[in-house]
Length: 272
Image 1 (cartoon, rainbow, N blue to C red):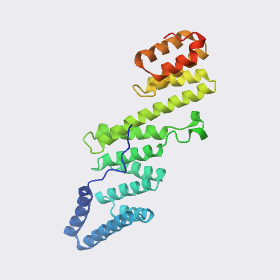
Image 2 (image 1 turned 180 degrees about the vertical axis):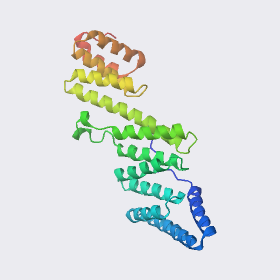
Image 3 (image 1 turned 90 degrees about the vertical axis):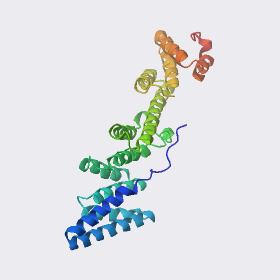
Image 4 (image 1 turned 45 degrees about the vertical axis):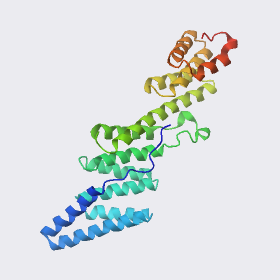
């Protein structure tokens, strides 16, 4: 089973320190007053980090917001944006966190931390859809929105394509595979939902769509079985037998074959 990474991977402190040093040294070299301002900004950054470390996320977020304004145009301001987004993510404030990340990517597409920003964007949406099947009993499957998963996949895909050497890329690839598997599983759950309620055309179409959109996923076995069963209910023997043949050829030891035989053997159509 795929296991999710525990928490957010640690970021390299060197980038943060480079931002601080560039701010301080550059300011001190040109103007003592600006040097004092830069020191104040650095102190503000440390205060924000201390609040965050203590779990006072609301206070830290406000300090990072101030820091972003006071250090505008510097790498430190960029770091403040990302720190805000991460803490908002930790606070489960998805909309605000995404807004900050999207603003960062729009304003700083070539930032040294663009790979991290894309990873965080994907992670926010990814975690929003964890527990994908947790509330299915309470919710009509046909109405559940999977946009968060698709948005997460898009962000991870951009990360992997633009920054293949990023330290976040391997984890992004794993999460992309997980997303594909869960989206396929969702489609098959919807197909089963329709089948159990007698909507056999909808069940067959949804199962077929899952096979077309998501190849090589575990849910494909059940998708084929649902197509077989739905076509039988619809009185479409050729389509039924075609789907059954594909199921047998691709999954000769499938439990769904045995289940289908046990259920349908009295009806005289199970050909294998």
